[in-house]
Image (cartoon, rainbow, N blue to C red; front, side, top):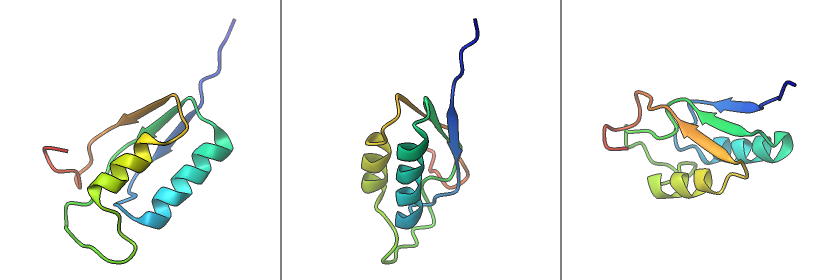
Length: 82
């Protein structure tokens, strides 16, 4: 008996509000078993503009994703204390 596991992979969303919104929509549409965030979901450059989310808001949005599991791999834009 085989079982299918659906994984949605995302990277390089860099605190960008539009990309977090796109991720939310993709998760709602595809309903993966796992969302794998494989680097650069934050942005340590400190660049802030109207389309940039705070680190706290990024965390809230990732926490609210309608997926059973969300896993992370630190990218080069996540600080050592991420």
